[in-house]
Amino acid sequence: MNEGRVICASCDLQEGGKGVRFMVEWHGRPAAAFVIRHQGTPHAFLNRCGHVPVELDWQEGEFFNADGVYLICATHGALYSPKDGHCVSGRCGGRGLTRLPVEERDNRICLTEHHLANT
Image (cartoon, rainbow, N blue to C red; front, side):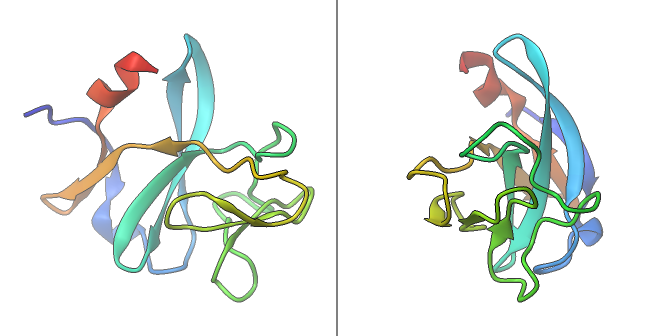
C-alpha cells in the first residue's frame, strides 16, 4: 500500500472550517491545492476556480462560504460542492474543481500520490 504524502494532522481539519493549503505537481508543474473536511470526510482539490484559473480562498485557508455549506471562489463568487467539486452556482459554466485523491489514516490526511502519477 502506498503510504502517500502527509498533508496535515486529522485534527487540523474541522467540519466546514478552515482548509489546509499544500502544493502538488500537476502536469509537470507546481500547483496550489487544498484539503477541507465535509460530512466527516477530507476532500482535496486544486486551488483553481473552474471559471478562470485563480485561487479560491478569500483569506489563506478560507474556502467555505459564510454559511459553511459550499466552497466559494473569492474572485467570482462561484459556488462548488465540497463533496465532489461540482459547480452549483456561478460563472463556472459547468466546470468544477479538480479533485485530488486523499485518505485519512492514523490521524493524518495523506495525498495518495500514486494516483497523481497518471495525471
